[in-house]
Length: 93
Image (tube, rainbow, N blue to C red):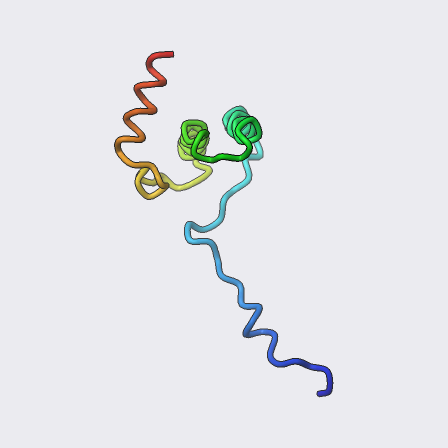
């Protein structure tokens, strides 16, 4: 076939996400956490490191409401020290 530059199907193979699907929060159970996280990102020029506590709160909400599988924090990029520090900061508020 003229003009056909090779086998496209080999190059367009789709790879599923590592953790499976990420269900949409149709009931807005975690919307407040999501909005806070996104606001933090905007306010901090999308520096994720400054918004880790908001990210953790959002992920925790999703796990509590069955919108994602329960995971150890270390598997989501949070060390034990990170989690402890965030919980202590939350208690001070």
